[in-house]
Image 1 (cartoon, rainbow, N blue to C red):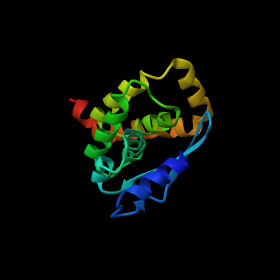
Image 2: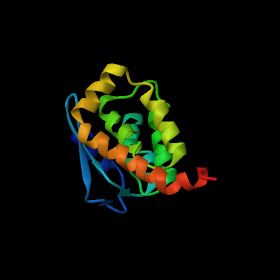
Image 3: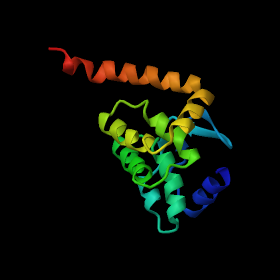
Image 4: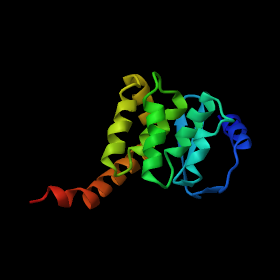
Length: 152
């Protein structure tokens, strides 16, 4: 995957190369995926005519980490509206579940439903620490942004 991402970045004009310094490592069947906390790239990069569909999809995974929630959701929809979720995409789906935007969580759930149960179990077992951190984030965000609205 690293070669593919480097290949993509060589085809597009990056106006800002700001990736948040914090990353999380997720273990997948064939290696490790490093996911930046946030990226600050032009959302137009995903629509570049220089990229083929596979490259746009790969880049869409990274755009699920964009600083703009609308861009994150649009990128997520590219992944979840496909027929199949690739192994390298699973960490991006689970990572975005640590967000606080309900509409994004609903879309992410549609993608997670496309992954077979055994693959999910294996992924969680390999990445238990990150999954627990995501759960803590989700609870914290929910408490901050939604709990007050439910209390009468």
